[in-house]
Length: 252
Image 1 (tube, rainbow, N blue to C red):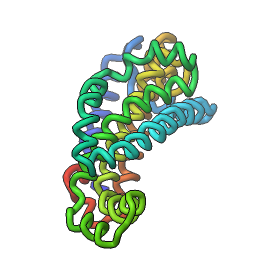
Image 2 (cartoon, rainbow, N blue to C red):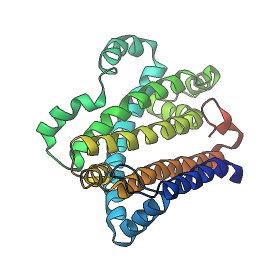
Image 3 (cartoon, rainbow, N blue to C red):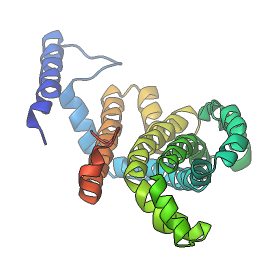
Image 4 (tube, one colour):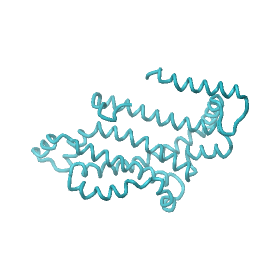
């Protein structure tokens, strides 16, 4: 880790703390970093931070698993077959621009409050980028590898499992890193908007209770959570694929 990267945030936090001490008056909208840290510590000790984190990650994870899996399953044939892409492209371009949050009223009618509501919106949001990125990765598979599969008389399923997927994996991991970030953003957005559940709902409750310290603590925690997940996935990508992790989009 490059410790110099901490210089800017640490300096900003120190400046904010000094400014609050100079002003020396309370605020219903902001809180000094020390109070934010204290609120985060109390939320961690009493278990609310962990509970909210598990709830948010559950909704994001289930939705990502559904949307990502469907995106991969449909993206591979679209990338390998020009005919399939010509047939599917109009429908994709019609549905893809729909904002995921626009489906909240429909999902609320179908699933009600809870994890299924959140997961359904996350699934829709992650399906499209995974589909497009998978299609692109499949289309870029080396033609010579596909020719080898034909010479070996491999069936369609065997060709995908033994040739296409291994060739796609580095790019697919880049796609995974991108949709993981999307899943977390959408999950928190759904919680803020309608779902009484998770970190997003905690942000709203803290705001309504005039607890800027807790609100900012939860906001910072969401950022730390996303950053940590990205770092873990980046390191895993580097360990699995080495030099191939340097493909476009593969850096931090």
